[in-house]
Image (tube, rainbow, N blue to C red):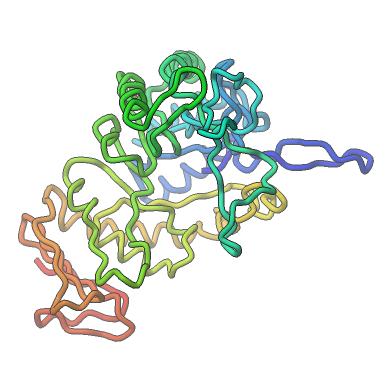
Length: 378
């Protein structure tokens, strides 16, 4: 769920930096109500752009505050209480290892790279494959020497502000921090520092991490954005979901949002079946055209009204699959006759899932499977 973002507004023809609300707390509550009425339960609502500047989140050095336009603390409590009443959970999504703009990040709070510049996380232009130097908001890395106290301060502020123990982070432990100015921190030391900070944050909290480094799995209650596809490089003979094979039965995990990927959504759904990844979608309650001329304008397929009718269909189909393998674990994963398009996943309860990624129907061990589809046999 996307909450708020920065957008240039105009007053008497004069531009100024304003805030654009994408989904308020009351609208998020209404969306949860819709999903519940459609029979979709156990929802984990990851609320991005909810604090301190929204999607382009600023440093949290002064504590956690609600982004403007979303509602009050009591509105959030109403959302959280409603979610609890229907078996759902709200996970405010925070940047914890980085922040947009240098405000609040003095010299000893920001990481410095080896050429004595402030450490940044860069985005790349998908057309030119070069660093995007025209981004209005630069993403700076938190100094690892400051990280432990920074996260402890955020944890205390978060608990006081929201009174919940569920928190998500899209950047925490996704990279190993270093610092080359003042007290220098190498990669190995940076890993030790960041893991210790993550462990401390997870104490008493349900922490959801976004495709973190593998050492961080121990500190997360659930994982999201775990890749279900390979890099696509021609040198690869086959795509095998090793990560999910390891995680299955030990952690709750999802892939990336089905409505944000460039590949066919049906293929992504079948990949979720193959890897037993929970389904994930990203939505705005308001029209996604509001993202035009913002840093998030590439998220054009997030309008909830467009997906409202199809999401229950995806979840109903997925639930039918999940019920057949509930309580079981993946015992084997194989390519049928060394064909990367044909797969067999076997579960500990004897259920087999036959998968066909090809363009034509195929027969796998005598089971007929339509193109880009699957069959479950007990």
